[in-house]
Image 1: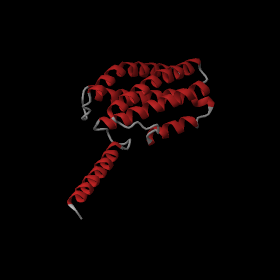
Image 2: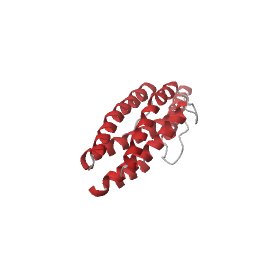
Image 3: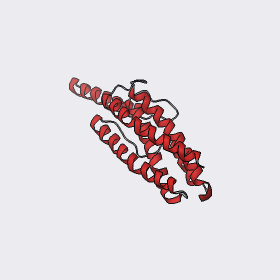
Image 4: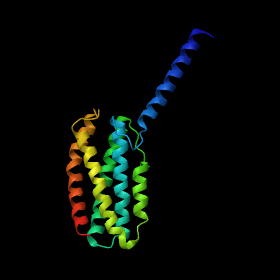
Length: 178
């Protein structure tokens, strides 16, 4: 084989290996802590999608007005935040999956199976636990822990954190009323 062809093949294989390793590295299971920018994007977006899906369900199945209203608020605000993540990801070549992480899918499936009479309580509990998880995730990213180096993510996390904390407070109020 001539030298030019060998060089091209080596470059090709090297490119394939790097691409495959990059895709694999970006795919985190939801039981591990994220340790990079892509991992944060994966967990944060899945968390937002869980809240949006649950909020839509609350609008449909919620019995109390405050549950339905909170569901509407969550859908509206988290849709906007989800779009921000997508825009930031496109600009930085990160991958945004529309699929929920397995733990988030399990939580949503359990909420879907709730009887109407039990739905409000289950929804309130899910909103408290999922917002506690999100607050922790965004707090860590906002102070550059776990190797989240990207300035855009840190800025985004700092700006979003007060909204998540407010949602957590509201969810706790709803839960206290149940």
